[in-house]
Length: 260
Image (cartoon, rainbow, N blue to C red; front, top):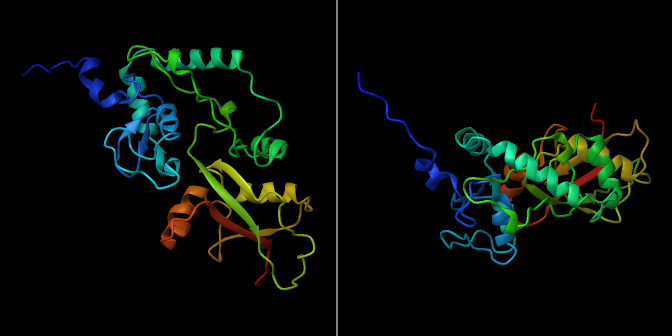
């Protein structure tokens, strides 16, 4: 019987290292337009100065290349299995980072501390528009020591792909409830693509100080969205199909209409 050839980790390095920092891929994030993959922090920092893919040079998006990024959790798990101790090293680095850089108690950004409250209440998927944890480049090890964010729930899904949303109040021509449901003073939010419509409804109820029994409809392009629909699902199946690719995605809300 033929002997099975053993592979060394270095044999896979071309496939599991980042083109930008030359280290192992941490939070591997793929550009959907060209399918090139980089460390999440590396590609996010790159897109601060350019809209082009650093590997092939193709334009990713005219105005917002971050919208075209997707995390590759499967590749992340493969890398952690291939490289002994990598997960533990990165976890330790993150712990040390947060010890030196304690996050602010009060949220900053589009909706301030209220988004923090909703974030925690809803399982931690709403963001405040503040930049996620980014390890300094100088501290990032190369190939043998790596960088990944804690899988702990305490990160409030800040490592998820983000999406910007505009929440518009839809008037119902004098229907009952219009005097209660009003427009938000700050209607733009940034959140995880995993946020569900149900979480958006909770956010709106708290922001508008609605009674706990009060029901809202959330719509996209005139269609009522189910409470379990995620923002990514709505973007891919409702908003993006408009053909306009306008940004941010607009969701409308109104008092719930009982058709029964």
